[in-house]
Amino acid sequence: MTKLKNISKISKWFDGLKDPLLIAGPCSAESEAQMMQTAKEIATLGKVNVFRSGIWKPRTRPGNFEGVGEEGLQWLQQVKKETGLLTAIEVANAEHVDLAVKYDIDILWIGARTTSNPFSIQELADHLKGYDKPILVKNPINPDVNLWVGALERFHKAGINKLAAVHRGFYPFEATALRNIPKWEVAIELKSMCHDLPIICDPSHISGATEFIPEISQKALDLNMDGLMIETHYNPSVALSDMNQQLTPAQLGDLLGNLIYRRTTTKDADFASMLETLRSQIDSIDQQMLELLAQRMNVVEEIGKYKSKNEVTILQIRRWEKIIATRLKLGKSMGLSEDFIKKLLQLVHKESIQRQTEVMSKLGFSSKKRNN
Image (cartoon, rainbow, N blue to C red; front, top):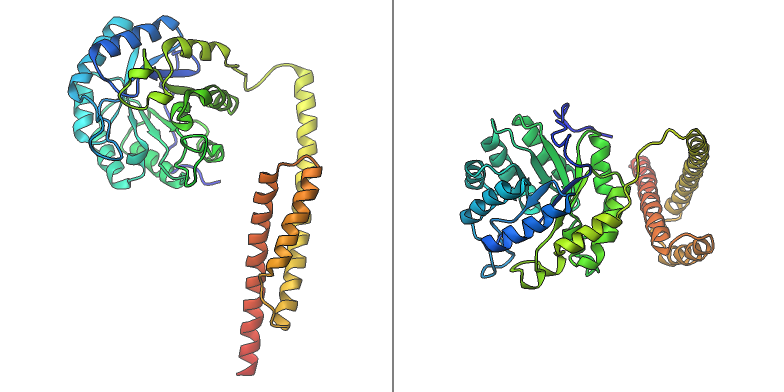
């Protein structure tokens, strides 16, 4: 696993705050009254650390509500003064950063669209040199962990140690129940590349609808993420943006009260012993599984030789369809999900085609060389 370059120190900048880190507030700042009422109701819960709000809201198409701009920063100043909550906003350019500093915003986050553009990230990183503010970097629109990593590296290279990643899901190419597909494995890969990097989940943007937020939030905590960023509005039905994915403060309180906060470790000796036994079983099974896959690929290469000798194509569609049908039936009878079996078979088939291609190319080149 490639480690994050140049990221040797990540400041535990939210140590001392409530654990996990909880960020809540409206999608957009709409009015001073809306901001103050929402913030006061959130603060009353006693569980939230940071109040968030969108000041600039670039939309996919122009003409929709695009934020109130600098005026909203004045409202955030008042929120902090009256509630004691830290404040957080999204920044996308140097002007946003300068205004955030002017109005003493505590935390800045980088949106998914900005993360997707290395030019924009570099400009922001250069401009943020010398500022001692935590930077939260949302994942890019598409599931490209290297693009996400690159953004974090650019900020760290600029001298910013107060970093965290925000997992907000990835744009789906097909219609799904969720607004963005989670692809938890991408966030897990990022954590594997930098163990000390905090990762916060944004269940609001993954869900796109409040009904899915509890499930996504619990999943994030179960995967040992460091916090949640949840959009909250005193009256979502009148919100000017993303009304369907915003909870009321009361609903947020119910959600936070019902979440299960599990530990990463335990001192229970019996638990540790049983866990080690089960993990040893998994290690043994994994070794056998890899040995079987290696044997399968050896057989695949032999098939490639016979196909080359008899000038038969690599892809045999009827054989592939038979494999899918029979293995799905067998796997389902063993309690495996159809989606998992399909994905596994597709990976194995892709590698098999690659192996046969290499074998046939090598044999074909050797045969041509002899004939010449």
